[in-house]
Image (cartoon, rainbow, N blue to C red; front, side, top):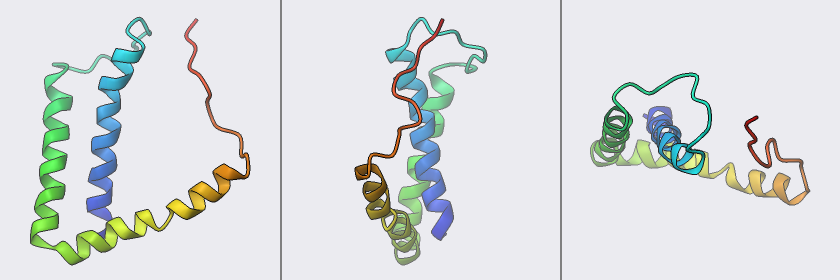
Length: 95
């Protein structure tokens, strides 16, 4: 439960990126097309959110501990970011 709840939160965020990227870069080449877009990713995001909510209701302590473990990494993230560590990608360019 500790890890699965966090995993489904990140799965939902990653799948939501499909919507953001399609809106932000409408003319980008798409080597892979999402079948039945937008229904398949939308159903997956809804299902992931439902799974996380169910886990929070049925096993609240374990779910919150798992979320707390992920949140415990935020100070390290902000520390390394404040040190001026180079970002992986500033902009995306398609040629």
